[in-house]
Amino acid sequence: MKQPYLLLTPGPLSTTPSVKDAMQIDYCTWDSDYRTVTETIREQILALANANPATYTTVLLQGSGSYGVEATIGTAIPRDGATLLIAINGAYGQRISEIAEYYRIPHVDIVFNEDEAVAPARISEALATHPEITHFAMIHSETTTGILNPIEAIVPMLKERGIITIIDAMSSLGGVPLDMDTLACDYLVSSANKCVQGVPGFAFIIAKQAVLVETADNARSLCLDLYAQWQAMTKQPGKWRFTSPTHVVHAFAQALIELTAEGGVTPRYQRYHANQILLSDGMQALGFDLVIDPADQGPIITSFKYPSQHFDFDDFYQFIKERGFVIYPGKVSAIPSFRIGTIGDVDTADIKRLLAIIGDYQQLNR
Ligand SMILES: *Cc1c(COP(=O)(O)O)cnc(C)c1O
Image 1 (cartoon, protein in one colour):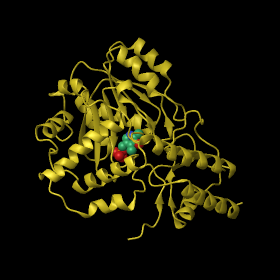
Image 2: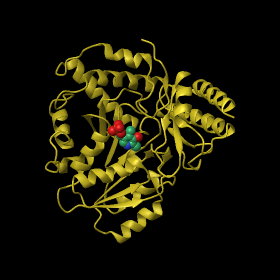
Image 3: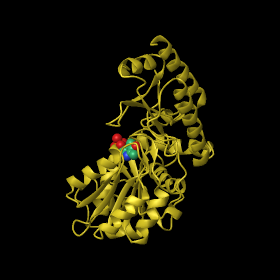
Image 4: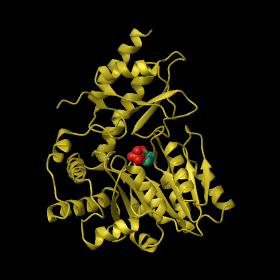
């Protein structure tokens, strides 16, 4: 089967033929072959984040990334006596606030403009005025815009006060160097179909064992009980609680092999970064202004303003799609914009082809 276009979207994204091939075999979930694959993945995820296996563990969870975030919020935060501080500068931060509403978790939202990075000073102010805060959550790479939030400057302020910290690193883990041992956050959530370049189907949570072990009776959902999922996976190593996405797990194992073959997270970051710089410079030369200050911009996805009031995004999208690329509509409410991802099995030659197509579109619509 021929792939009709390359996805320039932040997940699902374009995977390699060998990752797709890994899904051609049907595996049995209780067989030792499969369980070994699961255990290997759990160990390799820790290595990706530079998380010491003596301190941290990985829990795999069926579903998309949001299932992982919800399971973490709903398990980490006790039913009573806890307050969650949430830093929000986009739709994914907002989603955490929505999860807190569903779970009736008292929460304090610090809301930034969507084109602004989370500012450490405002978090420190909030901590001073809200001594009741016990937990904190924020997004590392806010995929709404492409901002990379400064978690390294923020997490230590929370740790100092003994606040449990939860980082949504969905669209950064595997593509942006992260050092859990230094960061020392309690939970970090990501999923199969982003920078590791697997296919969609499960989320994973890196958790501090000493913290997770205290959460036994917290969950308000059977399927999203992170503690129970961890216990099941630990008691029978490699065995998932409930049916696991076997084909997806194998694709992920292959994706990890390919990440290692690329040289690991830093070379992958460099490839994404080179894609992003080429895209950003090329688009600006074609008349598309940036939404985000380059100082806050990450390598994952870039938002561009509509070049004029008359810009017809649907027409632009179709023109590009017919020529082999799929891009993303904008998600910033206040600014008419669209987004182009630079992650997945994509390199600068692809970005050059895309820029040539967009150049043709601009010529035709002048
Ligand atoms: C992709 C993503 C998620 C999860 O979204 P799903 O659609 O549930 O996979 C959460 N947070 C961020 C920052 C993301 O990029």
